[in-house]
Length: 269
Image 1: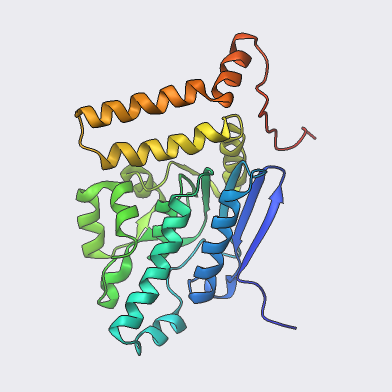
Image 2 (image 1 turned 30 degrees about the horizontal axis):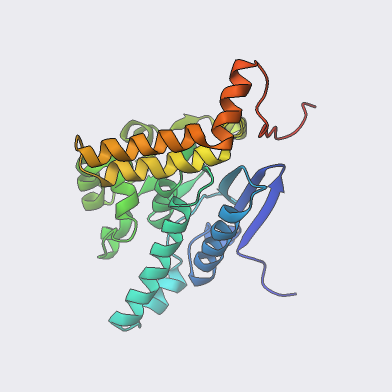
């Protein structure tokens, strides 16, 4: 028998479930898992049948960050080889972040280093109260460099200064308080909380959701209060109102019916 796949992708109706499948190493990253995640999110982002993506990990942890053997190999790399290796990790995070589909992280156990970066790259993060996080790179004499754009955006520069410098563990309650995750629930209620947010996501128009993700990036990137930002937001709403999806959504609201894109996950049992 060959090695098990580092990633499983399954479908639950319009939801794609992406499971990191290296439980023996707490779903730590290596080159193979990074490549598989990049490819999976690129493909799912183009799939018109996918309404939302759920990212989770097999076993006891979400992701414990970098694989020890991968780090050992990287220690022997040249600077240029390390640059190429880091670019692959950055591409994975960017592919998840820029995926046009809503992406939900289901976080249990450890989500450390790159695992914290993964959580920050997702649109919505729901965590078990037993989950733990941390930008632990300084404990290895490194820096949380590649994950920093996503983590700083999630928790802000002030919090990032503390946790990038200390490398301390962040429990679920603190992760919620600083904005790294959106909701914390008892472990027994984690799946139910994830199901609820997925159902909420599937009620939205898919094109509108893709436009909304792009809208957030645009607002962050442009000078605040300027005419360029105003014109960009005006253009966005005008395009949505004129779109077939926007017209259908308004018509469905006025006619008190479900819109044509209604994407129920499954019939009630």
